[in-house]
Image (cartoon, rainbow, N blue to C red; front, top):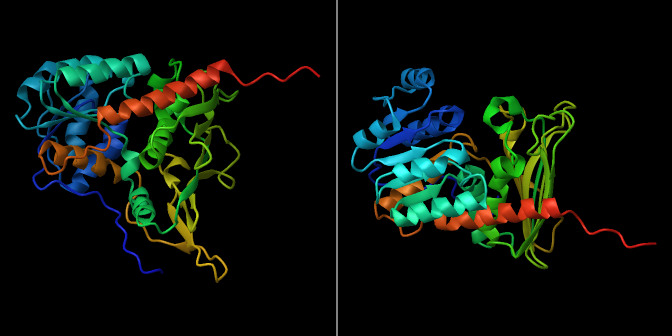
Length: 360
């Protein structure tokens, strides 16, 4: 192994404030609360419109208090609590309107259902002086933290190619609220990859995209397959390719992100997407060029994964910012609006279609 140090964990706040949850659905069960347990974050209470669901979560995660209404959750929350809002994009605006001025809030992605809603949410956060971030947690997956550290140190040189490839059989029935929506795949899945690209490369100048449904899931009109090209000029080349309808067994399933640079490359298998929600093991591989020997790929042991460990990072970064421990809030609404704009451009490109062939 080459002589470099790398980091895999998010930096935790010195004094984590308590958390009050608004929404106690599947993502909170599978990722938020397991992550908070690992990090030692205190959950003061929670609210969900489904009382039966709330009772189950209280019992399983020993939540001290279940609130009877959104108003009660806000009124009874500890003064320094961080609000953890995990609801569908369409509900974010109205809940944001109720959060007391000046408070810290972590909002589950996406930032609304479209660009118009994203702008309204941003305006509300500004008007109410909220310390607000969007839960783009893939940035904080241990394998991404390690990759970013290697790239920042210059180990793979200039980044010239970044590619996501997802070819799996996604169990869409787990998220029934998505079925009637006009936008699904890019807005609720590939948005993670779009945001991650932005965190490495900045906002692209333009986007080429096509998103479409699949005969195996005709009820999902919002798309289950997408191709997105994010334009950064000559370098880097950025592709996002997803097919969630690969129902031909696990052998040919894929889920990876690849970074290629002038001096090396990193390829990461994000196993969560394969056989979801159980997933398969992640894999982190890299190669560094020395100009003398034949390139040889090596493996790096990574502790933790996307679920649940990445969810530590988004909450920790917000807590540290709210505490005054850092002046950087990576997934702030001010930054997230650029991800939403990129997603909007992808949908516009898909709707407009490609260039027609000339007459022959």
